[in-house]
Structures are given as structure tokens and as C-alpha cells.
Length: 237
Image 1 (tube, rainbow, N blue to C red):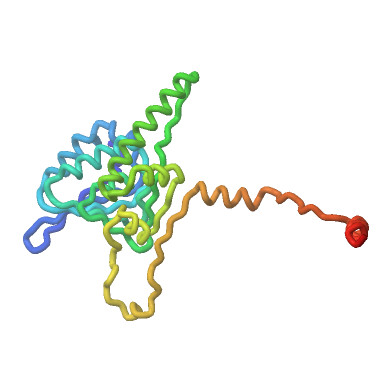
Image 2 (image 1 turned 120 degrees about the vertical axis):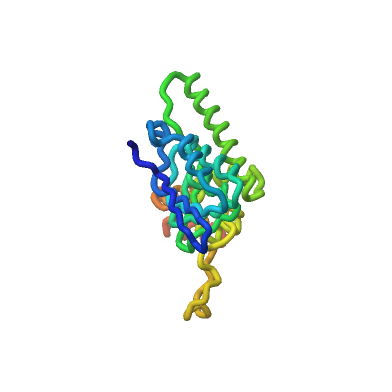
């Protein structure tokens, strides 16, 4: 039996069953095609109970189609789905996060979105077909982001092109999350704490910045002192 990247935890609190879904690790396409771990089994476990559920996510992403199936199942679930990003919701895992009725991020968590990636072998026509397929996959991913954030599709596309990373506050500012875990909780040092800054950066921007520093700058044009003196003499006549 292949290892599942998801696990259900059931707690009986006050006579009512509370269920927590833990998505931890890489979302693998192999996981879906084992005899024991299939989308049908996931749906069966999801619908084995009722009521609201909590989904904890800590994943670098993985297979986008497996993520799409989880996203659809959670979107169709009758109860409320609270998504809590533990440490990382990157790539395909960020798509799953968009299924949350409420999405909360740990103050130290990160979210990343980027363009879909694949490996293709063949001639120019095969490469063209692969490119067209990736564009269609991107459009589907953008649908999930657009529904959650209400953001303009062109802006979403630019963020994906740049491989954008958000800290918790920036994710909230952009609409990818609704709140930050533990925010507002009373602590002894709360009054002196600095407000968390919204931070976003892209791999493209970081790469360009690094290349700019590595590429030698063109030497500044300099005039020899003797030629400068001759020019000044000409100007004085």
C-alpha cells in the first residue's frame, strides 16, 4: 500500500465529532493510482462524516490534477471548510487552499503560486501541443485563484509568471487568505510587537537583481588630463 499524503483525525468534542484533514508533503500523482489510495477513497473518507472540517496544509505542491480533484471535493463538501496553512502552501497546494470557506495562515507560513510545469519529448509540433496544454492548465488554476481573491486575471497571470511568494499578511492583502492564525491573541509583549509586514517577492525579480550585480558594469568614459587641458585652452581662446 502506498503512503497517503493526507490523513484524517477525528475528535469527539462536547459530544460532536470534529474532523481534521492533514495534507502533509508532496502531492504525488503516484499516490492517486495505487490500489488503496484513489480519488474515490478520498471522497469516501471525506463524506464518511458530516459537519464542518479543518484542513491543515504543509506542502510544496506536486501533481496539479491530484490537487484539482481535492479542490473540487472540498468545494462540493456540504459543511464549512477551514483551511489552515501550517508552514507552506506552494504550487498545487495553494490551489487546494483556495477551497477553504475560510483560509488562515500561520504568521510564519508562506504561499507560492507559479505557472504549471511539465516535461515533454518530441518534435516542434509536440512541443507546441505541450505549450498549449500548459496554457489551458494555467487558465484552470487561475479560475480557483480568481474565485477566492476576486483579483483581475491579468494580475493573477503576472503573479504566476513571476513565481510569487507571499508571507501571511501579503496573502491576506491579496485575498489568497482571510486571516492570520493566532492574530489578536493576548500576549504579555503584544503591545510592543512590531506589526507584521506584508511581503511578496518573485524568483524572476531575485534572479534579475542577482544578474545585475554579477554583470560587469561598463567602464565610465574618462578623459586623460593632458587632453582635458588642451580642450580647456581651446575654450579659453
